Length: 253
Image (cartoon, rainbow, N blue to C red; front, side, top):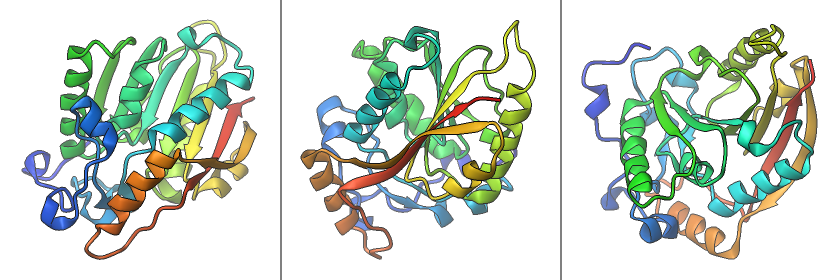
């Protein structure tokens, strides 16, 4: 990945109180920093995929937890302990922190923007210090398209991190990897997609079968918190509903 000089230390618009920054109860409870909203146009790192970034906004904990429960009911081929959890577009790492509490084989957050990745690593340090991290966990600052899936079963998580061009490139790269035997078995991948704006790209990608398509509701507390965060945006650019449109997919080859 190439980054613009100084990009790793640049303050991102939207993360001060004057710019509408509002803390989510998750951060207040655990002493981390995953709140805020950063418009996609401000997520500049010097990478060619910057222009396809959507925005930074952390997934509601209740939505994440409901989707993981639904995934576990989908009869994955292996136990959760065998799966690597990959958060694609990890941002400040809220989904990574939540996943680290579960008995995954490993948890990896992949984030293109160096400022967000740096904050995510600080959050992970807090999580480890409080002994909430049960799985080996790390944050990688890299382009998701260049990230190589680890061998063995993987569960990928995407909270609408980028537009269709990057989604197509990512799925093409994954499909190529999954079609080749790795360490003795064919690739295995399940995918959870929140705020699934590029669902049509997945529908056209050979090799994936959809397990679920529908709305997943925020808890009342998360709905109140996310509405408050959105209401405090000076420009009123984004909006939150009481649910997220989601889907779940499985690689079938």
